[in-house]
Length: 290
Image (cartoon, rainbow, N blue to C red; front, top):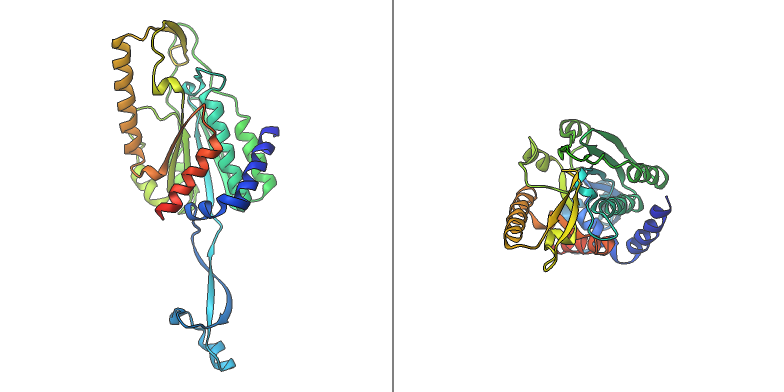
């Protein structure tokens, strides 16, 4: 809760200053709703004229509409054991949870409905979207407080696959829901029915990378813990390891781009970057595109 309150102060300040327009452009409402009747001015759409009021008052008046702002925002947090890797002080999981908390608080400040799914190899937890600062803070605290999936023990192999209930979400969530999928996104096929989900929902993908995933340290030999294999592996910076690493990166990026073809729908940051600043840049890019 202390972390969430610090994040909330930063989110609220940004929404009131620089981020409000970007957020509203990125997360549009479902339609238009009637606001009031105003006097018709030259250049207004004649289709909006309220003929009953015009006939009663003798001057032309039109209906004014505003965008319906309420949206449903669903955080899908894919909590795989590989997220527990970290070459520095912060693991990928910690950084990704902070990013999830920021998005949930952003929805709270903008009076949206916010829910989440916490998916692990052992099962999942689904919380329906709620409205209001208190309920959303409680939901965010619940997500951030979920225990990490167990790591492998020496000599065993830990499954990295999670069980995201896509069929349940398709039935439970209304059309045009903002679906933000956060995870490690290894190279793998898209979920069954993913194309249909993308047509029904506004989908976005958020990923956090460790610096060693961008480039292996060169010129030294050291050991690193593999959370999936449950053992230490030796990295020596050899040409063979560098080649294998480059191939792994290329395969992963190709799968990532195929999952979210629109580059404005995917966000990648490193554990060393400021997650909030990256989120602001993300929404600004979407606003510019619109």
